[in-house]
Length: 269
Image (cartoon, rainbow, N blue to C red; front, side, top):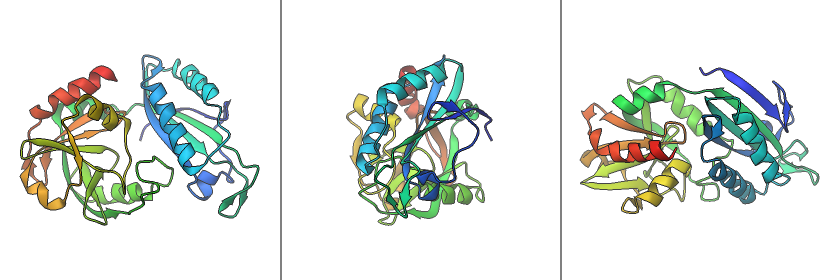
């Protein structure tokens, strides 16, 4: 468990939040997780854009984006290497599920120690299996990183009882979506693909960056039956930023074919 180094709400350093926060009551909020390196937030503007777009999608108002950008830069200056999490709660004023007319956003910022095991994972790879837990279908929220993450909680509980370090998660349509907390790239029959995320999952920033640099990667539905032809798997998120899979359900996979993607993401992050 990583140690918390800093926390604040609306610019005030505190170690608690109100029980009335809608993100606590209903999961009514969005968030992003970023890497701090050398006292700077990696991909800061991308993270701000992600938060802004998510807030627009679920109609959260009251965020001063310029002020938030400056605040994150100021906080990051105190850390050489750490993890930054920003939660934008819809606020505290409620009429049951409905937000009150005067409900405006609250900004929660956390800094935690960086998960150092990612360095070893990136070098040696990790093992992965297939989750029994299925992800739901919701095209209205697909791609967004909202604060209702019960599916990931179930997946974390499930992987703890397996021999694997991560799990591939499929949705109710039997389409591959992601791993527990990462996007997935797969080499199948000598072709790199990544799952479509129009009905489930989170469209991560590392995924976006990789797709922009390598347009030959196909974005399409991936069925579980296709995994018999798997040659390599790469996981991506903003912190790792890329980790290869050394074995899939006991079958050894190639790590070396993932190295160009890993090198690129390391270089730009």
